[in-house]
Length: 247
Image 1 (cartoon, rainbow, N blue to C red):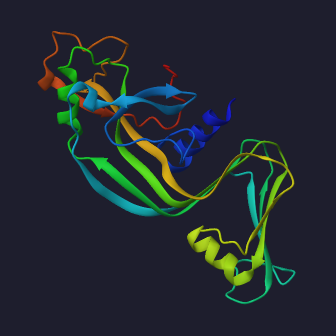
Image 2: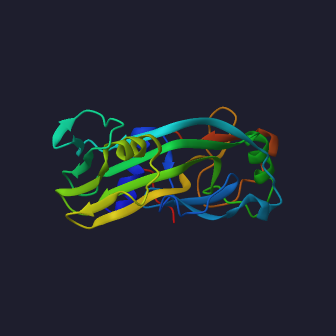
């Protein structure tokens, strides 16, 4: 299984969101449409191409502290193991140990959401366009972080060691903003390494359906016998199984 599919499965399980791949560097916004590829959302374009606009609003803010079950975090301060770093001028080390291949460590001090204001109105407008395809998924919410760190192991028994003063490491675990006084070392190359960057991590998606729960699936346009007023935005909320790739 590819790393993208593993990351998508990890995010669905941990945060109940759909992954963008690769995270952080992929440009995605509310109103984008696309398909699933390797379990992650892949952008094809924006609904503006169909003459449809989507008003947005700010969603909730939170932090992001995720790791795979096979990832262990160990802290040493002054040569001794500690549960948390103290604000002291003592040499210290933060170790992130990946026991298995394709394991993840994801941190962000601030995770913000931008969300679509009226998904049903957007779905009805899209249903009325002859070029819209039922298989398209639409981004209704984007989750983006600041000072995001995403690490993924390419091999089993991969160890990351971040060394510096205890006070600086304590601040790192609060903000995940890397400074020049820290040293970052690996025993094996990582499959994915993002340190202290800003950008999108995941999205919420919907596709078109009918009031009452019927999903307008498939590759074709919305049937002409279906009135736009009958159409609703159906959120993709099956986070317990892999989505079917349609790209």
